[in-house]
Image (cartoon, rainbow, N blue to C red; front, side):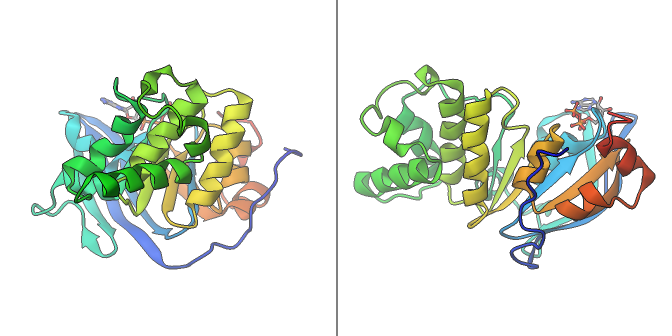
Length: 265
Ligand SMILES: Nc1ncnc2c1ncn2[C@@H]1O[C@H](COP(=O)(O)OP(=O)(O)OP(=O)(O)O)[C@@H](O)[C@H]1O
């Protein structure tokens, strides 16, 4: 673990963006998330780590109600973003997902042009009054995703024709185009080569200035590089949560220690 470069130990802000209390998730009879309570800070990168199948992705998907799309999934408990109950009946999940963007493991651009990939969300959410405003959102989003310079001369080309790393940054541009406040990333670098991974990790650093970023990662070195706070999940429970440097150098729970020292995984 010598290569770990810890990011700043303190969080940038203590302002709570996402407050989850007593969250349980069931897939039929499988109890996948067991009574998880966590406050996630604004303008901070929070990493979810833990062995395969411990529930990291399931819990991440609770934050933008993506589990609603899985018929066997049942979510209980309370999750609030800026104090608002996101499971309230009046909340439209489509609107919620514009506010809480998501980037997946495998880059999944639409089979459309680069421009259309980014403009689709703002269009359906009515965020631009005219073409000039839409152009501006597309440019700003591509700039925020550190992709603008590479694609500005071929915005009409298919998004699927970009390299894997560029496609992932396009997906990040698509996620930021709807002016989200939270970005959820589910192993966003696992399909990328080391250079593209480095670019996306650098980007995550920048994204933190504007958003609350929550990232699921299998890579402990990645968690230590990109996050300020880390939550360790084990068999559906959130066992330990704190500043990333503390979790990696001074874990309090034996299960966390066993995982980070490679005894379980
Ligand atoms: N769609 C689903 N239907 C039924 N069970 C599921 C579904 N998705 C996940 N599970 C189960 O819920 C538990 C948690 O899975 P989840 O994918 O959240 O874990 P994870 O920690 O993200 O795993 P990994 O690191 O392998 O991606 C596992 O037991 C898994 O089999």
